[in-house]
Length: 164
Image (cartoon, rainbow, N blue to C red; front, side, top):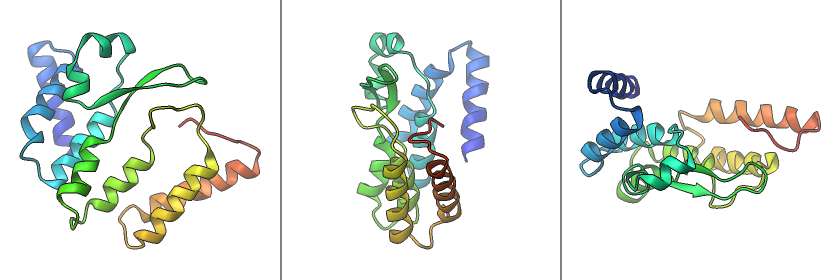
């Protein structure tokens, strides 16, 4: 599904000479209201990958209302635009018994709050451990465990934060 949406974005962008961000808006708007949990998950993944400048965000209200992006204040990195997790939250709210709730919660771990002054490895590790405890049969279990191992190795080497 994700590859199909990405190919669709690329195709429409090249066909109509539109910036990819405009195509993202169109896709999100088309499918959002009647989306299945799987489609909401893919829309959320696409929206979370959007890289938009502050200037572009401030000029186009669609980034806020359709793509659900927001400005994150950061003393360390400078303010930036990031996805607010809307589509992942919709899976949890509208489809609480879906087998994709764990996916949505996993992706929410990595979204910035309204203020982002640093990336705390211990905080990320704690969130991942809680995720594993709550969803021991998740399809993202291996990925979460690998990330915890990476974090533990980073902490041992003295790194307080990682930006990846």
